[in-house]
Length: 244
Length: 244
Image (cartoon, rainbow over all chains, first blue to last red; front, side, top):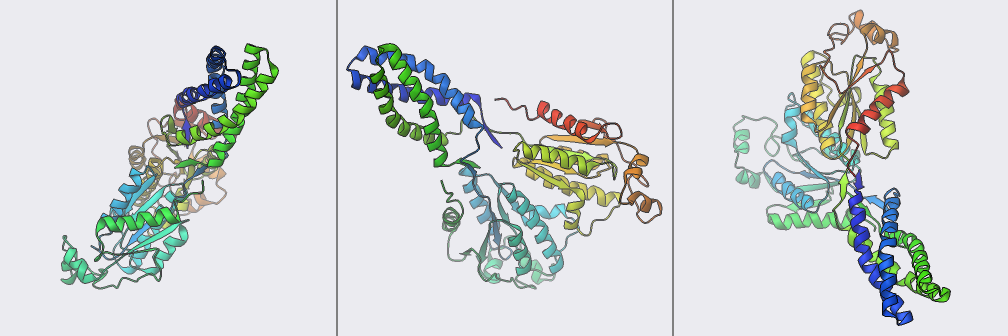
C-alpha cells in the first residue's frame, strides 16, 4: 500500500501556488489595469490558498477513486536446457525494474533447493512446475509482476500454471537440442548423453511445444537486445497499456 | 504499482476550483469592495486555472518524492493444534483487509497439499515450516503483509522464518494440550492418543516455546475480540505507525 507524506502535500501546495498566484495577478491586472491591486491580491492569496491547498490534498489522499493498480502478470520463460531462458529473463527483469515496476524474479533451479526431495522424473518435474506455478500465482495475485524461468517441458504443467495465473504470458525459446548443446557451457548435455543424467529434456525426453505461446523467440536468429525488445513491446501493447 | 487516472485529476481540479475561486472572489471583493469585479475575475479564473491544475496534477503524478510504501511484515501465528490460531489469524486478516492493507493469508494446512510428500516427523515438519517461511518472506519482500498460521512447534524453524523475513511478528497462542483437547472439535487429539497419528504436537512431541514472542495471547483467558485488538494495537504501535 502506497501512502503520501505530508511533506509531499506541502511541496505540491507551494509549487501550485507559484503558478496559480501568477495567473491570479495577471487576471486581476487584465480586468482592472491596476498593478498594485494585482500584486496585493496576489500576495494575500498566497497565504490563504496555500493552507487551503494542503487541506484539499489531505482530503484527496483518503479518496481512492481513480487510483488504480497496474495489472500484474506472470511472464513464463520456457524452453530446453541451455536455450538462454535465464539470461533473457534476467534482461527483461532488469528492464521492468528500471521502469519502476514491482517485479520478482524466480528461476526453477533457484527454487529447487526448497524442495530437496524433488527429482527429475516426468512426475516430479510436473509437481515441481506446479508448485512453482502456485508461488508465481500468489505473487501475481498480490500485484507483483513475476518473471519466471524454468524448462517446464510438459504441456500439462504449463497449462496448469496458465490456469492458475490471472495474466499469463508464455515466452517460448524456440531452438534445437543441437544448438543448445553447442551453447551449453556447463556440459549438462554431454553428461546426459553419457547417462549421468536421466530424463534430460532434449535428450531423453522431448520438449512439448505449446500450440500458441504468446511470444516465440527464435533464439538462434535474434540477438539478446532484439529479443528483449520483442518481449517488452508485447507487454506494453497487451498488458501495460493501462487505461488512464 | 499504483497509478492515478486522468479522470481523478480532472475531478481534483474541479473540486479544488470550487473552493479556490470562492476564496479569490472574497479576496478581490475585500480589497476593492466591487462585487461585479470579484465575480468577473472569479468566473474567468475558473477556466484558466482548471486547466492549469490538471497539468500540475499530471506533472506531480510523475514525481515519486514523498510517496512511501507502508512497511510489510510477516505475522506468524504459532501454537498447539486446536489452540485457535486459524480463527484468530482470520479475524486479524479480515481487520487488515477492511483497513485496505495489501495482505495475504496463508495457513499451514492449506499449503500442505502443494507438497504431497511431506509427513509429520520433526525433520519433515521443519522442512515444511522452512518452505512456508520462504513463501511468506517472498510475499513480504514485495510489499505484501502476510498473515501466516501453522503449528510450527520447533524453535529452530521459527527462528529460520524470523531471520528470512524483514519484519517478523510472532504471535504465540499460549495454552495447554488439555485445554486444546477440549476445544478440538475434529477429534485430532483423541486420534493421536489412540496412536492413529504419530509425532502429534502436545501429545508425542512438546511445543517449544520461544523465549520472547512479540505477542503472547493467553487464549484460555481472553476472548476473540480482545485478542484481535491486542494484536492490531501492537501492529499500529510498532509497525504501521508510518512517519507521515
